[in-house]
Image (tube, rainbow, N blue to C red; front, top):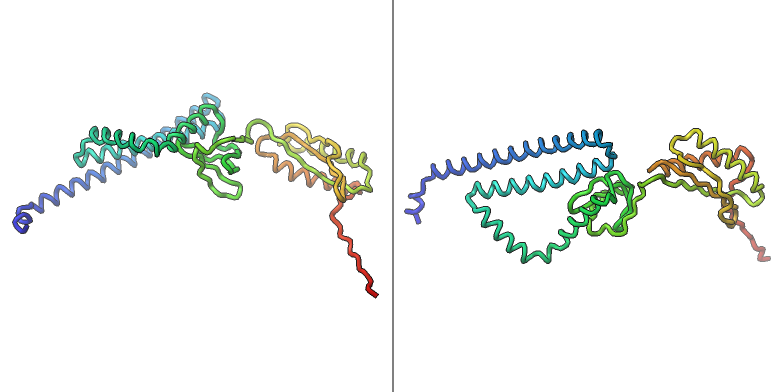
Length: 279
């Protein structure tokens, strides 16, 4: 054993190790440079494409996200192959062996394949874009990224959900076309319903003139329900995409102020206390 150790040229071994380490560092630096340059080229290309082809911002961001995703996976593959070559491994033989192993574990990778195929058709059919408000897979929120395997959905509480593409079933896209703002407001049974309808409609017409987010309406539909302590009147409007919640909040304020100014009561629940005299 000692004879074997004596025969080893430690200086040469250290030199070879140093050269190998240096090459690894150079390869990794080259990987980072190519990755950075590639991302900038892709981003600038899509910026120009968006202006030239009049692509929507959401569609442009979606395709850009997917392209960056594919670019990253391809670059990682090239990096791994280069490192194997550096260590003297036959990449062709490794790939052939990987094909055999891949065939063996193919049934276990069905989920991954399903994710990729589903993601492809989601993009091909333009079902979702970055920035869309969607509901799917038990989640609701804004789409932040669409990848080959997963779609990222930001919930309204700030939680980022990573949803496998194969779980995107029964997709509801709330961002296609105008949205509806709906407000139900109650008046007391003792007030004049016709007067209340007229007051509310006048307030709606003034609101529409002052609010650029309203596309159509608001219109007073009439009495919606007869509650336990109030008569519920329904008001609806068509708004620009993603503006329905803001319009509803503003509309409630305007309608309440209009009713207050005309002496029309908005009732609130009452409790009647009955004291029984035991004597």
